[in-house]
Length: 90
Image (cartoon, rainbow, N blue to C red):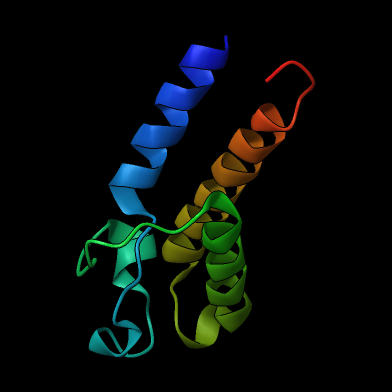
């Protein structure tokens, strides 16, 4: 189980947890939203959660309802991974 969690975490981090240039989409964070315009740096899960929460807080002024739904789903996924990694025995 520990190995699976580590593989999932590594894949999750590799797919979209790197910094972005939010100004490129009128304040939208393309890296968090669609894994575009990402640098080669990797954030921790905690940093990704904080970024997702910050983007969600921008709300409908910046994001469409569908985009906000995607951000909420990504936040839930990140929190689930963090919870799994924090379980005893990992």
